[in-house]
Length: 86
Length: 290
Length: 135
Image (cartoon, rainbow over all chains, first blue to last red; front, side, top):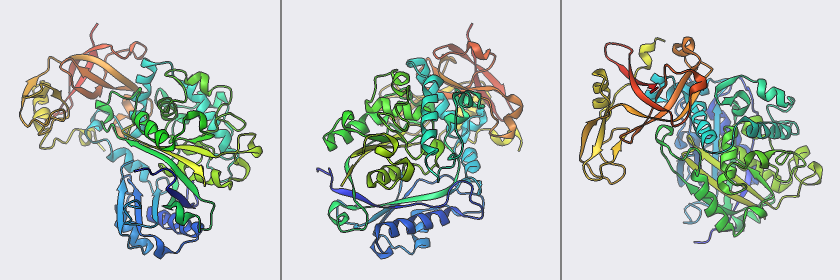
C-alpha cells in the first residue's frame, strides 16, 4: 500500500484567536470548518468525513463536543466520523 | 477512509474556548485523576518530569530551550495573527520569566487561547481541480508508546517520534537532508528538541549546538514553526503545525513566507509532527508542493 | 476547595492498593505467569495477558526516575506547599509510581537517588505513599 503523494490538503480554515470573548468552543469548530470549505472552493455537501481532535474537558456550561455534535452544528452527515487520539 | 473509498473529502477540526471560556482550567483539574492528590496537574508537570529525565540522560536544558522559544518568537513577530506578534523576547526575558514547574519556565510553555482551525484532505487527483495549489502528503507515520508519564521510560527518547519519523521518511523516500523546513508540535520547548532528535536531525545531546546561532529563525538553515507555533502563535493541537506547512507550501504566508522574503530556502518539502498526551503518541507528516 | 477533595478516588481495580495504604502497606500485583509486578492495578497483565496475579507487599525502597519542582499552585490546596516536588519513583520490585519527595533539600534532588516510603496520613480514610531520601 503505497500512499506516497496519493492524498492532498486542499483547504485551511482559520478563526479569530487569542482571547475571544462571548464565543463557545463549538462556534470555533463551525467557523474553522466553514472557512476551510470556502478556502478549498467546496460545498458543505462535499464533506463526507469528519475527524475532530480529542477534546479537553468541556468548558463550564458547554456540552462535550463529540464528532456528532460538531457535525450537527455544521449541518454535516458524514459517512465516517471519529475522534483522534493525538 | 479515503483509501477505502468511504469518503471523498475529510475535514479535520479543532476548536476550544480555552481562555475566555475557562476550558483550560477544567483540563488542569480533570485530566490528572488520583495524581492530583500529590499536587500533580495537567501537562506542564508531566513534561517537566520528562525534561528533567532528559537532563539526566543527555546534555539538554534551558541553554538549548531558549533558542527554541526565542527563534519561534521571531517568526511570530512576522505573523500579524500570532498572539505574541508584538512582543519581542530577549534571552533575559526568557530566563527572567517565572518557573512554572522546574525545569520549565513560562516561555517553555505553549499558549492558552480561544480559537479553532480546520483542514480538508482529499485525493491528489481531486485536488488538481480545486481552487488552491495542492499540497501533497508525501509520507506519514504514527507510533503510540502510550504509557502514562508515571510509567513511561521513553521520556528522554526514543519516543514515538523515532518510529513515526522512520515510517514517514521511508514512505516519502527521502531523508532529513531533503527537508526544507519543519513545523513541530510544540506544547513545550523540550518537546521540539526531543522530536527533532528522534527524527534524526541531530544526535542525542547535540541539540544545543544544532539550535544555536539562529538555525530555526528567519534567515536560518532549518526554519521551524514559522507561524510562531504553539509557543508564540496559538494552540490547535496538530493543526497549528499542519496548517502552517500547507500555507507555506502554497506561498500564502505574507511577511513570514519562506523564500527570499525571509532569506530562507523556498520550500518544496516541509516536515510536520503531532504529539498526544505526555509524549504518548506521535505522528509525522511530510508535505510536498503539488 | 479542601484538601479532602484531592484525595484518591479508588475504583474497582485500585481499591486493594488504596485500602492497603491505610495500613501503611505498599501492595502491588505480581503476575502468576511472567512475574511482572505492575502498576496501575488491573485484571490482566499488560505484559503477557495472564489473568492471575497475587498481591505482594513492597519493601518500600526504590530510586527516583525523574522529578519536577512545582513553583505555581494549580489548585488552592497546594498554594501553601510551594515549592514542592513531584516525582516518579521506581520501586525495587519494578513498578513505577507518581508521588512526592519530601524531606530533601531541592539542591540535593537527583535522578537515580535512593528513596524509601514515608506515609502521609492525610485523613482517617487516606494515607498517601510519599518518599524520603535514604541517606
